[in-house]
Image (cartoon, rainbow, N blue to C red):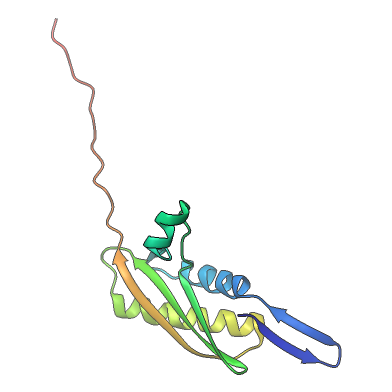
Amino acid sequence: MEIYSKSSMGDLVISNEVLSSIAINAAKDVDGISSLYSKPVDVVSTLKQGSFRVMNPVRIMQDGENFSMSIYVNIAPGKKCRQVAADVQSAVKESVQNMTGKLVTKVNVIVAGIDFEEPVELKEPCETEE
């Protein structure tokens, strides 16, 4: 799905990859987002084809001239989900509308998980006695 616009100067086509890239970059800049969530498109087809194709964390649904988006994110520990999600909604909507000139009617933010940091094991040098 691509966004088409016609004007007196010619045609304009905005691909889904561009819209996804804009949304991903806007979401990454929000405080509290640790990563974006990507999962295999279809486990059965992945096993049959032998390739590991990863689904884009952004889904775009077009309704005429306007469109809505869903973005899957992982948040950092200790952050408030509701506030981070609201910040992502605002950032993504504003960025996409400013860069494309198209109206974004809805931005769904799906918090897929929390990225907990792995505990770092400190290995101190052992002291030997003589």
